[in-house]
Length: 393
Image (cartoon, rainbow, N blue to C red; front, side, top):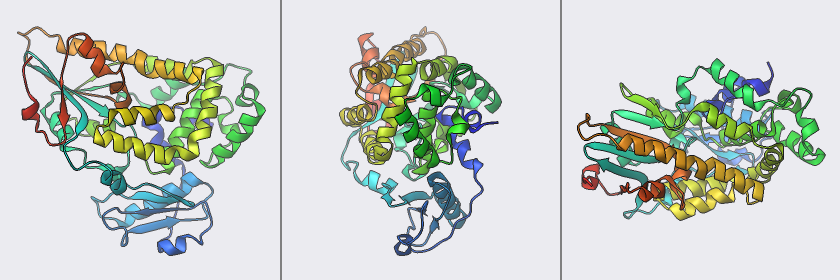
């Protein structure tokens, strides 16, 4: 089986990439790190960075170094400690502590809204799908909203789909037609650039030769995030699913619609998106750290600005972003309205709805779309308790 097939699932299953490597590491001081040979990475336990640290050096590629350093660090850390990557080759990685220190101490909004109609309550939260373990614990209002809920609502419940079925359905959309290869559909210069980037993550063109450019683009993004220490298992969906208990799981969309959107774009669009991804791959770390600061600060404008900056500004990129965000926002807002539009005699329910944070910002975000239909909620602030936000429209 080719690596393209093994890596065919969307981002929520891409952590499996780490299991492809059997790695070892060594421990030494940060000063000595400078003299080590790449590919290399340094991991620490955030609460004890001087005592718990691990290095992997001379690895075959960047992802191998990152995974090795983190696993070595975790072997030395306490059970409740999360290790994070702080250096990758010569690159300094923004730590969870540094991100938190940039969040205002004073009262500020969260990416969390509370809606109520009759006795039905719906909490709408903005998610980050792949996150640093060191950014936990979450704002307590998110946990409190979840604890009050009896149903968890996701864009798509990917965890409910067996890996083999996920692979089969993804490959229906993500492989090139017979007779085409990545080399034949990409411009020569772009294909040459891609070869270099694939090498950073232990891949080569032969492994992804049948993959559409959009699949390769997604794997480059996910691999880069994994290398920086951002893990799907630490994303909000995984976090809340692990605590679901007896809660019902509902969906706003379906998997096939998402796969069609990702992989059935015109080839011209896919090629341009891949090129733009390679353009920003080395700059994504500070942009992502800035987006996380904006997310934790409830700074909608800054979050949207940074999201657009890493999404590309060409006509084809803007058209794809509109399909990815605004068009889906209308679909998801309609589904959320349905959850709230219940008969007052029905049994009361409390929903915890989790969507990507980018779906909540901008003029066509889900919250403004709901308001246009007369459904207004209250935004939860960092100093609120959920009881203080409650009201009956």
